[in-house]
Length: 175
Image (tube, rainbow, N blue to C red; front, side, top):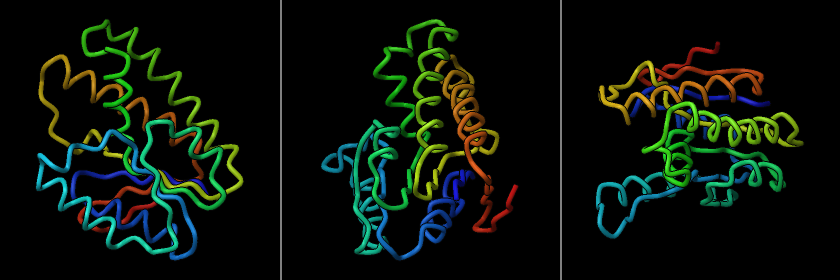
C-alpha cells in the first residue's frame, strides 16, 4: 500500500493517515524542520497532542532525508508532512532568492529520489501533504513559488502511489 493523503489545514488528513497505518510497529517520520517548541507554545501543544495519540509501537524519526527514512525502515512508514519538508528543501537550497526554474530542478531531484524510495519500499508507505488548491497562498513571489512547487511535489509523489485520498472536514474521498 502506497497512499498519498492530502487535504487542507485541519482537515483530518493526519488522523486518517494514522488510521491507515494502524496500531502495529511503524516509523513515523516528522518531515522537518520542526519549529522551536520553546518559543512557540501553540506548536508545542500541537506536537504534544500528535505524539500522545500515536501508538507506543511507533518509532518517531525527525528528518529531512525522507528517501533514506523510507529505504531504511523496517516497518510501515508514515511521513507527515510534505509541505513542511518542502520549506526545508527550499531553505537549504537558498531557493527563495533564485529563479523559479532553478528551484524547480532542485526540488524535482529530491522528490524523484523520494518517489523512487516509495515505489521500491518493501513496506507500506503513507504520506501526508497539503492540497495547495484548498489553501490560502499569499500572492507574492514566495507564496506562488511554494504553491507551484508543492503542486509539483504532490503530483510526482502521487504518481508513485497506488491511491490518493482527499480529506475534507474529516471525510475521505479515494481518488
